[in-house]
Amino acid sequence: MMEDSKKGDIRISGSGSVSGGEYNEVRINGSGSISGDTVCDFLNINGSANVKGDMKAGSATINGSARIIGACEAGRLSVSGSADISGDVQAKRFKSSGSFRAEGGLQSEEIDVHGSIDLGGDCNAESIRLRGTCRIAGMLNAGSVTLLLYHPISTVREIGGGTISVKAGGEFLGSLIRSVLGRQTLLETDTIEGDDIYLEYTKATVVRGEKVRIGPGCRIDAVEYKQSYEKSEDSTVGSEKKL
Amino acid sequence: MEEELVSKKELLEMTGISYGQLYRWKRKGLIPEQWFIRKSTFTGQETFFPRRQVLARVEKIKSMKEDINLDDLADVFSPSVSGILLSGDEIVKRNIVTEELYAMYRRLRPQKESFAFGDLLCVTVFSRAVGSGMLSLDEGAELLRLLEAGGALPEGGCELILARKLGVFVCFLVSNPCTVVLDAGLKLISRSNLANDAEELKLKLF
Image 1 (cartoon, each protein chain N blue to C red):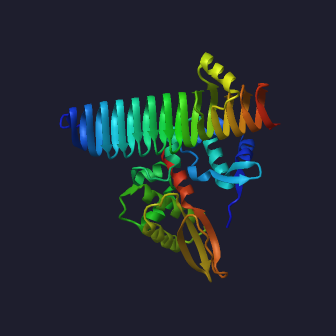
Image 2: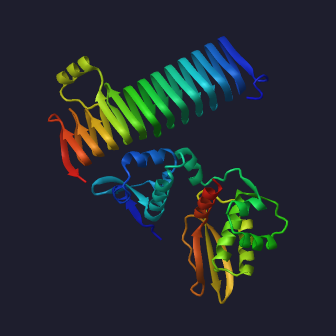
């Protein structure tokens, strides 16, 4: 922060390319490419950007599309449109409307997603709220997990945390489609473990928790619970065990 | 040597913690990723932990979490070494080693002025060995030479083996985890993980 005055800005209006480095603000209006690792306080992309290298930003806003070949670390990362990152993503606050893909993992305190996320690694957060679809190849670990799922099916290798709620999104149209197509799974996962769990339209091998409520449309091989257990008649559970 | 494991279910039962707490501690790095061992059992995938290490860790977190926040706690358990520099007086004042043992150390290393984390670790391990009567002062001096030559503690810690053969003292530093086959004539004095010493030391430094 001492060198604030020395750090310059980059502005691309129209199309252009620059090399990475340390900047105060990087702003791309139109289409731009950055080659090399970049550290900046503010990253603003309106249009499209291609970054070859790691990106580290205090606050990053992407409106349009961005591709980063490298890792991304930001205090606040907000994406409207699409982002595709080849490495790990770390952001204190993470917000995405549209589609977000990272080949690595996503680490954040607060994750808020409208649309889809696709992660090649683990997803760690204190709280995650997702409305849309997701594919998480690793583990989803969060203090509070709220998934409002739409078609097509979402997959997560395993989910662990405090409060876990998986619901079908789209109150009216969603339920209409589901009733026409028959019972449809919206989430497929191996294991779900948490303190307080509520599931709808979920297919899982094992669900373990203190309190477990199984809503409509679930197919679960085994449920293990400590305190309480409820099951909707519309769901099938292979075995139920109180610990 | 196969380490004894404990399943996740047993762990929660034995310690009385919930899934939420366990996953929270995992997120905060209080329980290292490597300790989560996934294995296939007849009931499907299950997670196991190294029994001794994880039980000790959970007890430690439970006993401390009221007065320290979890992020600070994570620093205590991370094997990386913090940027600490103490003077000789502070070592005694902060109760890292007793005055008597520090004086013994001082006789061996009279010129040492300031102590980084690695030096402090040498001092504490030396004091523990000599203070407990496990080693004589001469043997302690030898141990100190080994610790200093060992340099910074590698990630994940390393094991310190103290032994005697026909009354002659030997010591080794072994990077974790591995099996060490000792000569039958070698009498083992102690085998300890320096990561535990480092953790205890960090707690004292808090």
